[in-house]
Image (cartoon, rainbow over all chains, first blue to last red; front, top):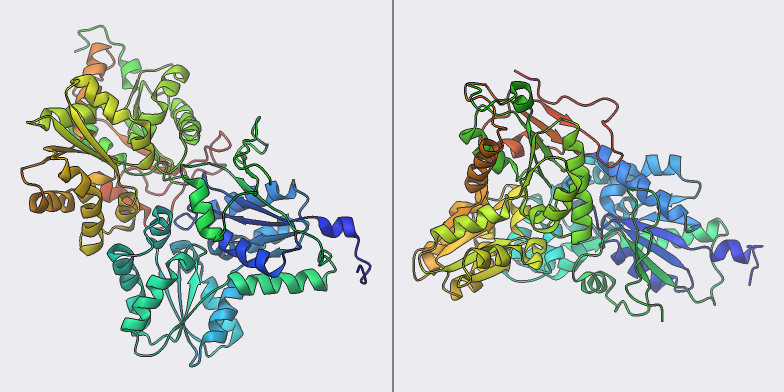
Length: 296
Length: 296
C-alpha cells in the first residue's frame, strides 16, 4: 500500500458532500458503493431546502456557507451533490475553497450523452438549474451537434419530500413535465436533480407508454462517483483500499420523519450513522449538537 | 378627528406583517380593503420559504429574525400573516417584541366555528401547524364540544407556488387531503395556510361533489383584519381615517416571476408598490437594496 507516497493521515481525511436537502444522499449512496474505504461527511441544508426555486445570488450565498462549514471537518475534497448548486455556484466555490470541488452536472450530461443513440437528450431539473443553462452548455460542450431539450419540473421535489412516489398525482405531474420532451423525440433523459431518482419508476412508466422509441433514463450519481474516484487517484488523495470508511450526516434542521426520509434517499437504514444538527447561519455549532442516531 | 388624543405621528407608523413567503399577501389584501388609511410593511422570507415542513425550533428562530427586522421600520403592531409561525412562535414573538403581536390562527378558528352549523370543523394546514395542535386548541377553547378534524396538506403550498391552481393534479391532491375530513362529516373547513385561498375553487368543487352536506370554506384573513382593527381602535393606535395608506414589500430573495406571484396573492397589480430585497441572516440591509418596482 502507500505505493504512491500518500500520507495516510492526509488521505484519511473525509470527502465532504453537500446538498440543499437530503436528495444528495443519492450521491452518497453511489460513492459509498464504489469507495467503501473513504470517510464521508454529508451536509444537508434542511433548514433552507429547497434551493431550486431561489435566485442564483441566494443559492451562491447558501452554498458558500455550506462549503465553509464542511471545511471545519478537514475535508480533502468537496462534492456538490446538488444540481442547483452545481449550476449556480461552482466557480464561486472553486475560488473560495482550498480543496478541489466537483459538481454533478458534467457527470449527468456525460451519462445522458452516453445513453443517447440519436443525440437527442432531454433533461428535467429545477427552475434554477434550467434557467442557468448549465446542462445545455455541458451537453453541447460534449458534442456541438447534441440536441438538448430541457424542462423545469419544480413540483417533483415536494412530491418526493411528501413521499408520493407512485399513484395518480406524481404520474400526472410527470406526464405534464415530460410531454414537451417526448414531443421533441428525446432518446435519453437526464434526471437533473438528486430528488428525481426516487420517481424513476413513474418516469420510466410514462416514457414507456408515451414515447415512440425507447428513452434511457440516467442520473449523475454513479458518473459523479466515477469522476471522484479518478480525481482522488490522480491527485494521490485516495484512502488505502483496505480501510473501513465511515459516514457522518450533518443537517441544519431536523424535521419530523427525518430518519425515514434520509433512509429513502440512502436506500439503507440510518442505524449506526451519526446525525448532528448544526447552525450555519451564525457560523458555529449549536451549543449542544443533537445526536439523533448513535454511532454503532 | 384625533378625538381620542391619538398622537398623529405615532399612529402614522406602519403595521408590520410577515410570512414565510408571499402567501401572507392574502392577509395584506384583507387589511388594505378594510383599512385603506393604514401604512403597511410586509416582509416575505422568500429565501427560506417554506416554513411548514421545518421543526418548530427553526420556525421560531426564523420568525424572530423577521420580526426584529420589521422593528427597523418603526412598526406599531406586528401581524403574523402565516399559520405556521402563528402556531409555533406567537409566545416567543410576544416576549421578544415591544409592540402587540397578532396571529392568524385564533381568527381562523373563530371563522371556522362561526361557519359551522353542527360543530364539525375541518382544518387543512402545513405539517408543522398540524403537529403543533394550535387549531385543535383554539377551536376547543371556543367550545369544548367542537369536533375538530385536522389533516396536513403539504403539497398544496408548492402547487400554489407553481401556479397549478386548477386541473387534475391539484384536484387529485385536494381530494386526497380532504377525503379523511369529509369522512368525519365536517360542515365547515378552515384553510389553515395563507397559500390555500388560491385553491379555493378546487377545494369547493371537491367538497360540493363528495360531501353529503354543504361545507362552508373559510380562511382567517378577513377575521384577522377585523381583529386587527379592534386592537388598533382599543389601543388608540388607529390612523386617522381620511389618511391614504401605503404598502411596502420586503423580500429576502427575488426569484424569477416574483411580481406575478405577488400579484396573484394580492389579487392586484404590483405597480406603484416598492419592493426591496433585504438580508435577514446577517441582520442588516444589503449594501445596495434593490428597488424592483419604483414607487408611483
